[in-house]
Image (cartoon, rainbow, N blue to C red; front, side, top):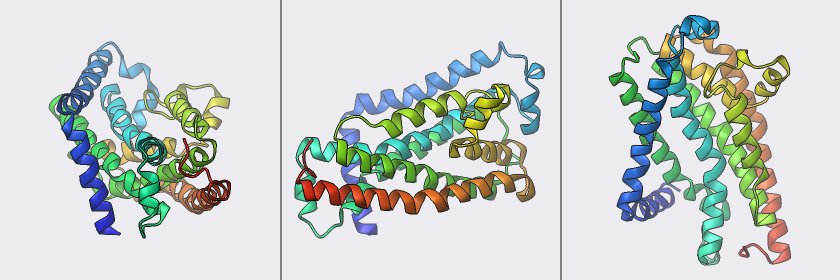
Length: 267
């Protein structure tokens, strides 16, 4: 399995870096985005946003964590279905299926580069933040790593569901579209969810990214201990236990249906 994942990683890295200008502009986009919110933060009086007090930070530090770790949410939702879709469009899916590698391994392998690249973007965000005064000296690194692990599993589960839907319907991805829009509005990426109406706060509590960002901000910005992280981590673990086996089951059903209909490699 490690050799398989490495092969997919090398393939996608070579493909991505062969378009050097696009690759560099993508990284520059991280810089431009970070500085846009940095200057926007200069207009915001943190004292007027009492919800920031729980993280012991300013708005720029708050939104920087949201921008950085939203990358994992986006990758988790998009990479699996995009990898499957790309293989269908280029006509390589049928050839890969003929190999001894199971389809699940092909789909997972197609997402490896996305996670590596998202990690690179996160490091760029955090370095830019440190250069502009964001302090991580008291960060609970282990708490952040546990949060990251649980977040990746929860987000990937949603992405595997989306890949299963794409396998059947071919075009359109309702799971990704709906969850991406909901995360941007109520997931706590750009502002604390406490500023939302009560009914939208309840919607936010149904999304794993809400708990992921809460735990990550507490761990990295405030240096919160395990007791303070406990609620968000338990909720993330609950999402993992529920969504991961469910996503595998749904994906298996979708693949079997596509095989029976003879449409697995159609697009």
